[in-house]
Amino acid sequence: MRNTVPLPLFSFIPIFFIFFSETLALNPKCEIQDHGSTLQVFHIFSPCSPFKPSKPLSWEQTVLDQQAKDQARVQYLSSLAVARKSIVPIASGRQIIQSPTYIVRAKIGSPPQTLLLAMDTSNDAAWIPCAGCVGCPSSTFFDPAKSTSFKKLSCADSQCKQVPNPTCDGSACVFNLTYGGSTIAANLVQDTVTLATDPVPGYTLGCIQKATGNSVPPQGLLGLGRGPLSWLSQTQNLYQSTFSYCLPSFKSPNFSGSLRLGPVAQPIRIKFTPLLKNPRRPSLYYVNLEGIRVGRKIVDIPPAALAFNTATGAGTIFDSGTVFTRLVEPAYIAVRDEFRNRVGKNLTVTSLGGFDTCYTVPIVAPAITFIFSGMNVTLPQDNILIHSTAGSTTCLAMAAAPTNVNSVLNVIANMQQQNHRILYDVPNSRLGVARELCTS
Ligand SMILES: *[C@@H]1O[C@H](CO)[C@@H](O)[C@H](O)[C@H]1NC(C)=O
Ligand SMILES: *[C@@H]1O[C@H](CO)[C@@H](O)[C@H](O)[C@H]1NC(C)=O
Ligand SMILES: *[C@@H]1O[C@H](CO)[C@@H](O)[C@H](O)[C@H]1NC(C)=O
Ligand SMILES: *[C@@H]1O[C@H](CO)[C@@H](O)[C@H](O)[C@H]1NC(C)=O
Image (cartoon, rainbow, N blue to C red; front, top):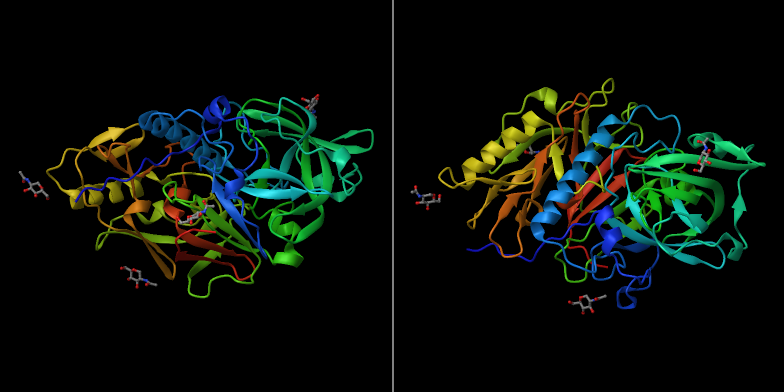
């Protein structure tokens, strides 16, 4: 049996800035009316996305580049210190953060202006490029002058204390932050934000005036983390800090999934594991990963590699912005070795960039099951393997977390979440997972 499937394409900010096409709106054929509290989610490389590369990249180049960006993102997630401020500096120094892979359509202001925001479960704040922005990457801006509900926040407003490096420009609250290789200077503002059909008046967000570098998502960021200025915190009355998403696979014909806001219409048939909060990294969604099964065998992982620890910040998170799952080294090696055994001891293993378990002949892969507290998630092959265009190379789509002092975080990434519904139920402190073919 040949496992030949179409090329999975991944996207990375620096590259798509070079190549993305000029139309900065969704392909009109892709727009379906958002209904109720559910909205469409697109992969940035989908045919619907204006950010898809206008010139295809080689598969090898794509994978190599993706690996480097993922590595930086995991390093960043690992190194987050205690954040008392809800917009934490995203990274320091030369770290580059891969921008999140999925976008949603937001309507901002009155009358509404449409922007495609990158969805990020590991960040809190929202920020958008505003008219007159110097150095913003796209030619699509939010124009405050055209919105009757727009308001600048002043230094005296309490929200001004929740942003990094706030300063006063006259009485207006302005702040600077670092995001990957970029720096951003923004006004703290409020306006009506609508994601699906419910308008949220007076939503607090950053209105970018100046940006440097190339890590800023072209039309802004939507933080779905747990801090005080996140979407969850600001819409608590409306959506009760509850949301779910289904991330479409690169391979699905329509390339669109969904983000469902609030407790209404969430799946009933879904498995749950407790959601944990780690004071070291309070924005992140932690769960307890107890073990990993490859085929029928629970692999031998030192307990410390999976332990949840509030002193060190160690543990396992779900993240929408990392592409390939990263396990701390001893856990990854145990999984990989058993995977290789099961695929066939006599097959030649090759590597590709940061992937160390690749084959140039067709393989049958064992199922991989994440054993969380109270919930087992068995991944189908599409969530485990990536295949090259010609079907000649197949790799295990996971890797070891970067080995440094902060390497204590296991990250369940978006490739492994695709075609599943992931439900974040903060009030009940639980995270749900159910198989679902993402369509909307
Ligand atoms: C999605 O796929 C279905 C079936 O393949 C097709 O009928 C429909 O037009 C597609 N929708 C979009 C938005 O492309
Ligand atoms: C913030 O960034 C702006 C523009 O780059 C700069 O002029 C200003 O000095 C910075 N402010 C702080 C507090 O770093
Ligand atoms: C190698 O493994 C495959 C699949 O497990 C098997 O079909 C084949 O006979 C093996 N070849 C050798 C030389 O052992
Ligand atoms: C998950 O799998 C493990 C190991 O196979 C098993 O012992 C456990 O009962 C399962 N848990 C659930 C909730 O199904």
